[in-house]
Length: 278
Image (cartoon, rainbow, N blue to C red; front, side, top):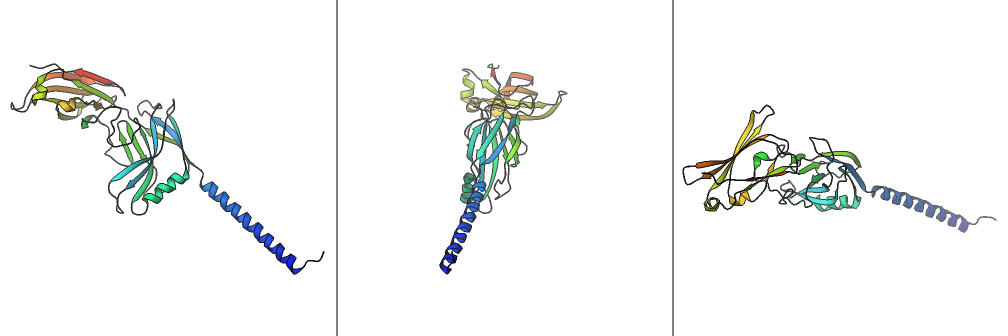
């Protein structure tokens, strides 16, 4: 049959429609590829034994600072899971979650993304670590509070991206080292002195393996402070000297207890019942 101009026009539109459908398909395929979830996997390990730690919460974090020039930084849980019996984790983060956080926090503030392993479910800064409260600075672990690789007892934050950058590819084999703290718990019994202004003077001497004192610090704990557990660095030998201190009596104090070369494994709470003194 002889093709008429109308037939040629119809054929031309069919080819254009097919091309548009093909381009639309390619475009949708590209969008679908870009919307694939981000995979983050690895292990949370105890740095001394290198063993995996089960039951640790692992959070994919969105980190943002207030103000265009930065300021106070806030950490938001975007996805939360926990490690298995071998300390392994695998997070599948929807691409939309990353994009949404970047849009919300990338206009007038600074944002980043990271991972956090912690012993408690809540990521709130005031949450107690394993039921302990940090009231003894000398006994805690830190690396100078470097935000990019912060090691605290029972909490480790690892930043994955630079400022105002998204996570763009899967990350497998990530290792997060988590120090789990031990703790001390001091009991004063019914001694009325502590309710009448007396304090516990606590001297902490961190020791080298040779027994030489590496560093020493002193703390004065009132009765409310004694109600908290005191975090202790695990596997680290310390001498602890506890005295009853009287501020109104020229600093007079009575030695209560001396613990030498004390070393505790992670998760252990050592209870110490203080005698009344002289």
